Each structure stands twice: as C-alpha cells, then as structure tokens.
Length: 330
Image (cartoon, rainbow, N blue to C red; front, side, top):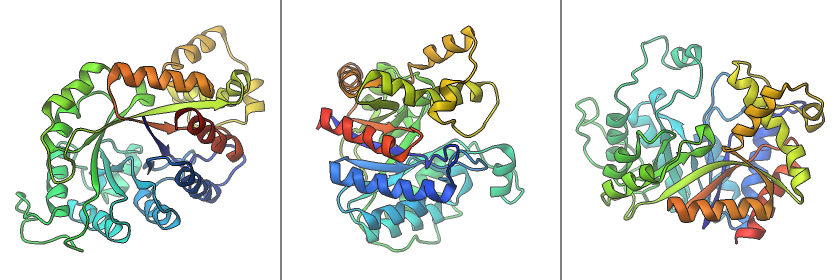
C-alpha cells in the first residue's frame, strides 16, 4: 500500500502560523526521505487554526525542497479561481518539477461566507458549474482548445509540459462518477465524516475512462491518525484533536489545545460518548494497530493509497507518527 501525507499546516496552541509552514517543509523533507508517495497541502481561509491558505504556493516551495515525493494540493478550491489561472499555475509547477506535481481540486469553499465573497471580490460566487470548470481547466492544462466560449480563444502557458496528475476530491461520493468519467484520480476524505463505502469506490472504478492524465483508476483515502510508541501515549496525544472536533461540532472554532490542557478539560459523559463515536474518523493507537486497520480497510474497500493527516501538538510527535507508520508499512 502506498502511504502519503495530507497537511493543513495546523497552528496548535502556543505556536505561530509561520512556524506551521516551516513545519510543513520539515514534514515534506522527512516524507521524501522515508519514501512516502505524495504530499498534499489543503486550502483553508479565514481561520487561525490552519496556515494553508495558498496551497499552490506552498507546493512550489515543497517541490523545491524535495527530490522524489510527489507534491500537490488536496485540494485547491476551484470556486475561487479562473480555469485559466489554475492551468497556468499547475503547468508552471509541473515545468519546474516534471513528473512530481499533483493537481488536486475540491468543490468546497474552504472558508466562511465572508471569505467566499471577499475572494470573489463581492460578486455572487458561482457554485453550480464546478465540474464544467474542472473540464475547462483540464483542457487548458492539456493544451487543448476548451469547449467554453470564454476560454477557447486563449491558451494556458507554459505549453508542452509534463502533465501533472489530476485528482478530484470528495467526502460523500457525489464526485465518484464525475472523477471516473474524466479519467482522473479520486481522493476520498474519510476523516471528514467517515461515510466511505465500497459502493462509492466501485462506482468510480466502473465509470473510469482512461485519459491523458491517468491511464487507470487511482484511489487514495485520507485518514486522521494519531499514533505513538504505545497506545496510552497515542491516546494522550490524540485528545486535543478529539476535543477540537467536539467543539467544532458545536460551532466553536479555536486552536487545538495542548495535550496537558486536553487531559484536564472538563468533559461530560455525553462528550465522551461523542468522542468515542468520532473515533471512526480519527484512528488512534499503536503503529501496529493503525497499520492493521489501514491494511484491513484497503483489502475491504479496494483503494490504492492511504493519505495520513496527523496533528499532534509538538512537531517531534507529529513527525514520529509518519516515521512509525513507515516502519510498519514499508
């Protein structure tokens, strides 16, 4: 099974946003050394919790700092950008790092209503044409004349470059058929809501048509993981993320606590039940336990690659998650 990295540049309590981006660089270099397949940066706006607001910029930096690992976005949020600009950005990235760039896109806004309108300069955002926008972007990346009248009289430069891999993100299954028909990879965010089913992934495979971007169907699944040398330590490091998600579900968005603060946080019995229920989307345990879960889920669901998102408070503990999983699965 391929192992990959999803990073949101988390800004945990007591840390600064600039530090989070430097830590993303450290993680990319480590992933490259350990043999991880790819690393994607997410896109989040109007939040002090994540520093990854410009994943395509971070991707350029990470690609320059690494040698073998694929680098990309997971994903860039299409609604905010012109297909022409998207094509130009990713063709430029691919020109600098041929064979290592991933164009991963999502249909979500990645922010609140205020940031959505600010990014669209006050205009009504277009949200019902995401697949058509994706089609136009793929055509421009592939040096084709787009079907869209707005874009068929221009070209995206640089031209004649090595194509990036193209991926469509999803968390509910709605994009599975669309990704398959376009011959791009399908990335399922299991850590969003835990709604992955074998039927969703099989639907993508059945509808897959080879394209210039991908010859055969490729599926990766993103998991939130906290692991350590022992299950007890993993539980200690995982609780801040558990409490953050609990508060997020209540509409309270703040920075992730330290493990010590999380340990002492007052939780009701109902809170503990919700946290336990959320463990379906936050895998916690020893590296061997996590490796076994991932292998069993791969065998059942039939995906190709597990993409790991991990947010322990300290960078040392976070890097150790990826080291421990590499030891178990490589």
